[in-house]
Length: 144
Image: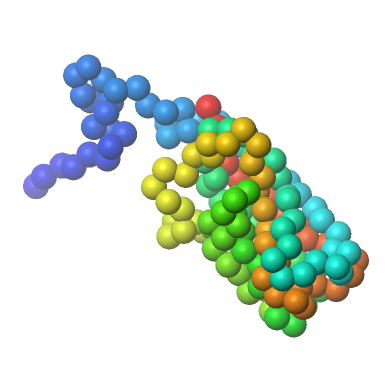
């Protein structure tokens, strides 16, 4: 039987040991909550900034709920400059919620490098949501 090590374990047992990035080991997990009221002027390509993210953080997971979504609501979730980084989601009419597991969507090193970055939702369909509807949710991230 053979034992294999992740990059982080290999770095810890190396001589000399390689320092770990705080967001990889023993980082603090933080949650940013958001709510947004739809004004019904949102169009395909518009971006809604939901949470400001700190430099150096790693997005772990997020959840959103769209009250009274439009018939063909499609939204992209990501960060400033990469609005579909964490995927595109079809809300498909009525009340819609998405608990998102990011295991297959997050690039290997997902640290936020910019000083000012937001977790965003991009509207990708004309029939997004009805006026007065709310979008609520949270984004979970690790930081040193």
